[in-house]
Structures are given as C-alpha cells and as structure tokens.
Image (cartoon, rainbow, N blue to C red; front, side, top):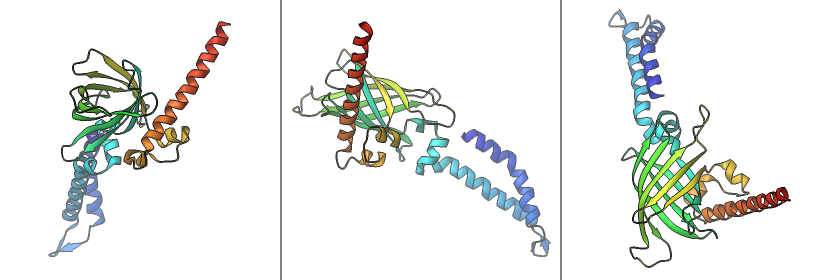
Length: 247
C-alpha cells in the first residue's frame, strides 16, 4: 500500500503543480507573477505531508498501521483454543501490541485451565513477522501461577502463528498456531480467534475489547468462562447428534 501511495504521489505531483500554479496565477511578488513558484511550493509541501504520513503516521495511529503496515494484521486481542498437546492449558488470551520505540510488535498474555482459572502468564522477548505470508514467530518467557519460583515454574519457548488470509480490505479473524516449550518434548497446537465487539456480543459479554485489554475487573476471566461454557454446550450437542446417528 505504501508503494502505491508513493507512486501516485510522484506521478501526480506535476499535475498538482500545474493546478496550484493556475490557482495562484496573478499573485504578484516583487512585480512578477508568482503563480508558478507558489504552485511548486504548495505541491512540495503536499508531497512532504504525504511522505511524513507514510513514514511516521503508522507509529502513532492504529488506523494508519492497519492500512500501511502489513505487520499490523496481527495487532489486537486474540483467543487461542488449545486442542492438542497440553491438558493444563486449554485457553489463552493474548494481546499483540505495537512498540513505537522499537518499531516492532510484542505479545503478552495469560493461559487458563479447563475450569477457567488462570494457569500461566507469558510475554514475548523477540518477535518476527513475515508480512507477506501472514506468519509470525516469537520467543517467549513465562511463569506458571501457584508454584514456587523454581525452574519448573518458569517457562520459555517458541510460538508460531499463521493467520487465515481474509477477503480484500478485511482483517484476518482466525488462524492456527503452535507452541514448543524449551526442555519439554511436546508441541502444543491451538486455533486462533480474533476478539471483536461481535465475538463479545455473541458470548453475551457486556464489556468492550478495550476494557478486555485493560482487564481492570477480571473481564478476561469472564470471557474465558463464557467461551468454555459455550464450547461445552456445543460438544454436548455434538455427542448427542453422534449417538442419534449411530442408532
């Protein structure tokens, strides 16, 4: 997108120069028609504004990042639904946020057990995003709740995320991922769901995504419990349907 805008900026600059020159034609400076000079100056200023918006705008605006920085496809709050590899960890809620100082993205989140209780927390230490393939890899470190500060309680590893490519001009909403823990011979696999206003409404939750991110009143635990409850109902319906089919 940035390349396209820059190309238009370059191609259209002579047109803008002629346009502004005609608009300011007749303006006299030191006894001379200054239309051409003013037109060129206004166009140069316009080009500078566009270039500044392209280079600096995404650092300060979420909206501009979405349209100008392909890495921002990962930005937001996500729910990871574990389906293989770990019994204690069933649900994870994490945020991918932009770090302006480093012009990079980072991850922070928590994992929950099957009964909706917090099980662990984790943060990325390094993150790489393949913007062309909608894939991300990050190194992380974390801690299991409720355990003494021993090597067994402290965790680290590598997580890989891959988003399902959405329709044009839309944000990715789902994907898959996997986690490998250092020193543990297992691979945890999960499905990804972007948390949006619609998803929260679907689970009858009254708060916004912003409040979920802040989590001042345990909104995250409410979400996890609502998701687990809905999944249990769906599984029960699925089992009932299967038994009916067998009969």
